[in-house]
Structure formats: C-alpha cells, structure tokens
Image 1 (cartoon, rainbow, N blue to C red):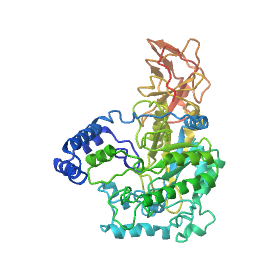
Image 2: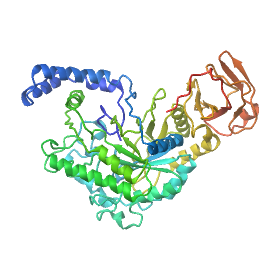
Image 3: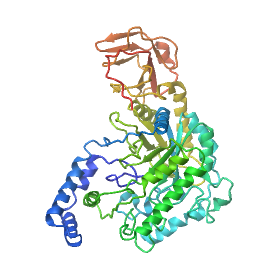
Image 4: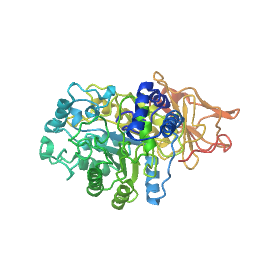
Length: 534
C-alpha cells in the first residue's frame, strides 16, 4: 500500500501539490509525447493540442478538493443496512501479510519496475531480484500463527471489523485458491502441511466468532499471473505488459481468473461483509484519461483501460453474499460504497461514508524494529476521525513467523483501557457542527446526546479545570457528566457557548489518560448547525 498517483496507484487520493508537480514535467518530455501522438496515432495537431490542454487543466484543477469526489449513493437496501452497521462500528483492523514479510520490504512493490524511491530493490539486477522474491514461498513458514490471540487483543481494544489481505499485488494468495500454486497452501510453501495453512479461513472464522464484521482485501492486479504480466515481455510498470487491445483473448483469461478468485472468497469463507478491492488503476479508462496519466507522470508509464467487468463481479458476489459492501478503491462509481483516504485524515467531515486506513507503525507490512505510534497518538487519531464522521482502519503487519510485535499488543492494550471508559462517545455516533474547537472534538448520538471529547497534549496527565466551547450550548435543564464519574457538573452560559467546571476529584483521579469525555444530555437546537449524518 503506497501513495496513489492520479487514481492510478495502489491506494491514496493524491494531494493537489503532488498532482501539480506531475503536470510540471519537462518541456522535452511533453514535446516528445505529443510528437508520438501525431506520428504514431495519426492525430492532427489541433486534436493533440486540445487533448494536451485538457489533460493539463485536469491535472491542476480536478483535485481542488483533495477528497471531495463524486459519490454514487448505494440503493440496495441490504447494502445500506450493512453500511450503517459498518459506520457505527467506527474502529477496524487491517492486516498486510505475505511472503514479503520475510524481507521486511514494502509489500509487493519492490518487484514493480517503476522509478519510485520506495520501490527500490536491494539487488541492482531486477531479474535476479524478482526470482529471489518469488522464491520466498519456499521459506514462508509462519508456525507461530495464532489468530485467537490477535482477535482477543483487537476485540479488547474496541475494534469491530477486520480487513485482511487475501492477495496483494504480487499475486501470492493467502487462501486456498484453485487458480494458482503460488499460494500459502501450495506444495512449495513449507506451511502447506499445517492444518492452519489456509490462514484466510482461520482468520475470518476466528474473528467472526468474536463478533467482527469480515472484510476481504483483494488486489485486482496480479503480477504473478501470466495473463496480467505476460512472461513474453518485460514489465516496465504496474500495468499489463502487453496491449489489452491487441490481445483481447489473453485479457479475457485474466478477467476470468480474477472472477474465479473473487467467487472462491465469496463462496468458501463464510459470511463476508466487505470486499475491499485495491489497485485502482485496474478499471475502465477513456483515451483522455490515459493521455493525462502519461503527461502528468514523473517517469514513463503505460496505462491502459483495464475492464474486469465490475458489474458482473459485484452481481455474482452479492448473489453469494447479500448486502455485501464493495469498496472499489479510487474508482469513482457505483462500486465504491465508501471512500478510503490513505494514511491521512481530512480536515473536515466528508459528505459520504469514508474510512482512514493507516499503519500503526511506519510500514503497512512487517518491518523489524519498526516505530509504532503511541497510545496517545492512536487515541487522538480515532477521536479526530470519528468526530468527522469517518472510520479508523488501523493496520498491523504480522511477522514472517506469524506474530505481532509486542509493541502492537502494548498499543492495543492502552487503547483498550481508554475505550472501556469512553467507547460510548465513539460507537454509533455522527458528526455535529462545529465538529471541533481547540482541543475539543464533538460526536453525537441519534437521540441528541452530545459528547465533547477533550484531547490532552502529550504531557498533559490530568483533565483541565474547565471545558468550554463558544459555538455550542447545552439546552435548558441539560445534564452534564464526565465519563468515568456519575457526578453532575456545574456549567454556565458564556455568549453562544458554555463553560463546564470539572470536579476536583476527577482532576486528581482521572479514570483514563490522553482524552476525557464530557457528556451533554441535550444541546440547544440553535447553538450549532444541523448534525452531519452520512
């Protein structure tokens, strides 16, 4: 999972500054590409210039709002019901795990021959490196794998859904597919003889038994499949290394290969709640979109329209799994039930369902001695995201032996302690204007109960004497209390806002660290704008 360029890479929606940078390619490169259009494609100079201008304009203007994309609301009542359940869950677990964990490298991307710093290989010979990478199957033996321990820690921390990488872009399957031997249950993998070898089934069953919603991360591109990266050609970038238009039969084989794998996951792994599709460059594209990607890239790329028949995939999946939430990441359209800004938090609430996905450490996949975010940081992120109407999908990368770092357990233990006191201000809530003020974040239940969550500074170990806001006010007769205490607080109006006195004993003996919750039974209807329901 790495930064998504122009809706083209693996994950994130790109900031406008990055897009603008791409549009500032050298005049020489742009001139060469335009010449290619004229000479090879037979375009007139007028048509080429119009396309060029449109592409440059798109690169600079179309992402004026980084996350403000067109959203296509779902109409299936079963999907809407499950989507609401997912929104109420708020906090989920993501896991990136595969053979790449043995090397502690960025998942899959080191075998992609693009000129990105984070894709660099330790071996200067790409062919040798790729062969060694694919041979990692022969040493992948996670004998310490224990999904019960993971589920217990995640559940205690307040997580309520899981998304697991059944297959990443390298094509290695963490489930028992019939489409390839490049899988954890394959004969080459030493773990294949273990009764727990089908780790996807083990994880899903264990977490489902613990009350979790279940999500299957699935990579649309597959860099091991010969119908995506044809061994007959070199592989210059993440896209198919042959012309889909010239070899439609070969592409159709890949479409059927993908459909079969998705069908296996929807048929053989119990109740499925979320199909989380990564690899947003695998989609239908117009001629203008392809040209725009070439013009705004920092190095040569070869994008194509890659139609895998999403309507059929989704139809078949929902026949097996009614109400299935589908997340076709970074592909605006009817199959993106919620959006997924990567490793970042929007400044304001978004007008559609959304989820921030973020690693607990610095890497999505396992890296020895990785630096993990503190409990203080994680609680602050969770509260900030939820106050804006989003979900928080927190990633932990298991080791090649099948273990989490002790640091991961430590962080979840700290989050668990906080959630046991304050989870009521998180689950089932929605944003309410003004969303935040100073150190305070707001959430609200459907019955109007409002929570003002005070986020402490890193070195702030006790609640403040007063909690105040200037644009929201309790209603007449409202009751104010702090989570962790039954004592009613004294408060007074201050202009259009209020000021609440935190009891001395609560200050001296707070029930938790990092953030404290003020519960307001009712607020004045005119003290804030209408609540923001997704």
